[in-house]
Image (cartoon, rainbow, N blue to C red; front, side, top):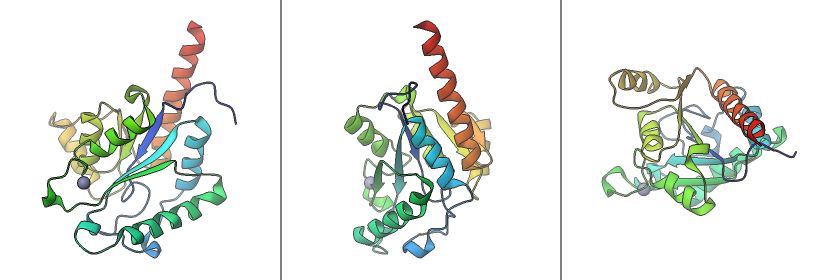
Length: 200
Ligand SMILES: [Zn+2]
């Protein structure tokens, strides 16, 4: 499908656990990856909009010795298989394998994962979005100057609203599900496209 709104400089960053799938603490096997309803179809809509769909995910289970890189790859192969029948795909996966005490630059709330993607794909952060359920996701987005969408899909989400109300973190939109987050992003991208056309 052609797309007149967005160049390839646009990306939607997606947190994984608690945003796309149930957060069971640590997802360390493909069988533990259980997607929320409507997630494959919603990712397909982002694909059709022409945005890159990029996972940004903390996977400290690797640094904790609970999972190998190969194990993580098996989970992501499973994710690809689960969404493929819906015409959906993930364009790139950026993960932090480190233990929280490693002091790395990539573990969210730091912006390292987002910045890696921005540099690799020459993304325009003002044209990107991030969707996540945790304060660390939205803080990483804010640091990287990427508009952030909170999904109220995990036990962590309510804390983020409180932090927003206390002026501690910035949110551009709050959605009750990933599907509704994509609804909003789609509207934003469409209206931006309309504006561009008006001024041409
Ligand atoms: Zn890291």
